[in-house]
Amino acid sequence: MRTLQVAKDAAHKFNPKVKLEAHHANIKDSQFNVDWFKGFTMVFNALDNLEARRHVNKMCLAADIPLIESGTTGFNGQVQVIKKGKTACYDCTTKETPKSFPVCTIRSTPSQPIHCIVWGKSYLLSEVFGASEDESTEMDHSEDSENAKEIEKLRLESQALKKIKESMGTDAFPQLLFDKVFKDDIIRLRSMEDMWKSRRPPEALDYTTLNTEAGNDEAIKQAILKDDQRVWNLAENLIVFKDSLERLSKRLQEMKSTSNAANSGEPIITFDKDDEDTLDFVTASANLRSIVFGIETKSRFDIKQMAGNIIPAIATTNAIVAGLCVLQSFKVLRGDYSSSKEVFLSPFAPERLLSSDKSREPNPDCPACSVAQTRLLVS
Image (cartoon, rainbow, N blue to C red; front, side):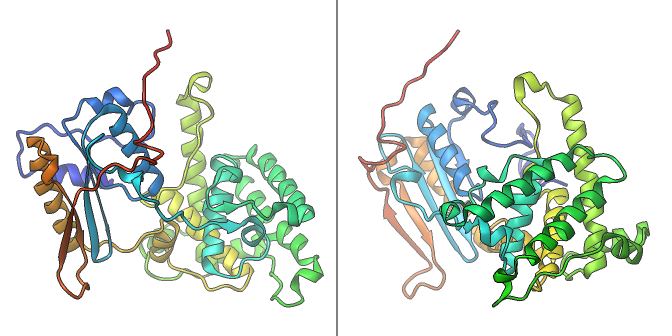
C-alpha cells in the first residue's frame, strides 16, 4: 500500500467525519497550481527532497498561504512558520546543494557503491524509461571539456541505447540491454589500457551463462523480492533485473497508450524510493555494475537509503515534530505571527532537547520571497 494511503487511513481514524483526499502525484504537476494552493487555510510541508520543498515554498508565497515547513533527519528535527512578508521563507537561507558526481566517474571509472547506484538511477533508468542523463542534478558535466574524447564515446553509447529501446516489450529486449551495458560497453572500457594501469579492470558479464544459472522459477523470484535486507548474489540480481525491466516496460507502454502526447509530451518514469519497480531496477542494475567493477554490492534496503539520500526515519522524532507543527498552527490560525517560532529538536545538544527562536524577518536578498510577483492570464 502506498505511503499516502497509509497516512490517510491512519489520520481518518482520529475523526472519521472529516473528508480526506489523497493525491498520488508529483506536487510539481500542473494540477497543483496557485489556485489549488489558495484553496487551503494553511499548508503543512514534510517533503523529503530540496527541489520539492523549494517548489511548495514558492507556490505558498505566490498564493499568499501560510506554510508550516518541517523535517526530520534521524533524531534531529525542525519546524518553521512561513508567511509572505512577515517571516523568512524556506529559501531565505542557503541550503546545501545535493552532491553530484563527474560524468566520467559514473560512466567509466566507478570506485564506490554510490557511483554504481547513481549510474543505475540517473543514467540507465533515465535513458531507458525517462529523460536524458543531461537533465540529472547528480551528473556533474563541469569536467566534460577535459575529457572530450571519452565524453563523445559515452554519447555514442547513449545513442546506441536509444536504438535498443525500440525493442522494448519484446523477448529480446532484456538481453539486448544487458549485453549493451554489462558486456559491450565494458569490453570497450577494458580496451582502454591506460585507464586501468592503477585500477582493477572491469570484467564483462555473459547473459546466456548467467541466465541459465538463474533459471526461471517464480517462487524463487518472489522469495528474492521479499528479502530486501540481504545482499543478492549475481544470479539473483539478474533475476530482479529482468523482472523489474518487464514491469517497467509494461508500465511505460500502458502510459503511452493512455496519454495524449500532443498535450502532455512523451510519458516517462522517474525514480522514486517508494516505487518498488524503479527501486528494484536500480538495485539490480547497480549491483550488477558493482560486480563488473569489483565493488561491494548492497542490499535493496541500503540502496533505497543511498539512492534517496535518506537517513532512516525515527518514529519518535516524527511524532515530536508533528506535535510541534500543530502547536505552531494554532498561532497561524490566530494570525499571531509575532509569536511564531522556529523550533529545533536536537537530542544530543548539551543544554536542552528543544530549542526555539523567534521567526526571522524575510531576507531582502532572498531569490524567492523578496522579488515582486504577479499573475499573467493568457486567453
